[in-house]
Amino acid sequence: MNKKFINKKFMVVAAVILVIILAMVYFTIASGTHYTSKDSKGNEISFNYPSGWVFQERTAGELIQGEKNSTDNSTYRSVITITRTLANGTSLDQVKSNDIYLKTGTVINETNRSVDGVQATVIDIDEMAGPERGKLGEVKLVLLSKDDYIYTITFVTGGTLEKMKGDIDHILNSFQTGKS
Image (cartoon, rainbow, N blue to C red; front, side, top):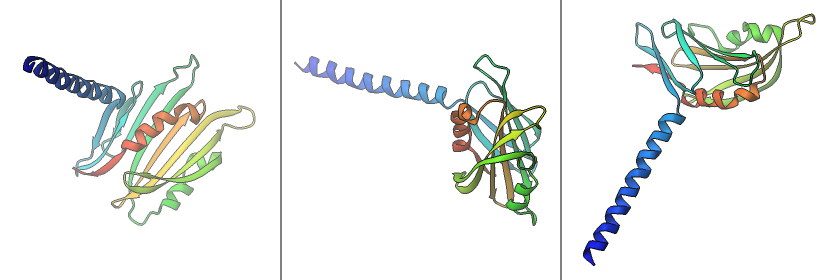
């Protein structure tokens, strides 16, 4: 009888270990890929992003761009641009008023949400190319200020923001800044 008890105990422990391993594999796959950009002073921007996206630095720790082609048999492409600017007397309102998408598009919605532990302004914009060209797509502009820097995260799509919602949340929920 002791052998049966030991065998059952072993099977339960083995099952728990298997579940933990499967959960770790799922988390790794579901979390996508991690991206980190660091400038020469150790200021860092990092985030996770879903598969299908390709990111590259334009200026280390200050300008990052990502692209994803549509997966729904259309020619739409989505682009993310992340910029970090030293505040140095510049306010979020000034950055917002100078944004090209706000100047050329129509605001659909403006809300707040937490990004990297601070309140961020989130603006959905219907981007127009002009009456002769019609609609280009939609833009989600995210502005936040942290540690003497202003961060602008711009999501642009030829389609609708609703199709990008999962990707946007994935990136914003993991977005972090700071010194390394």
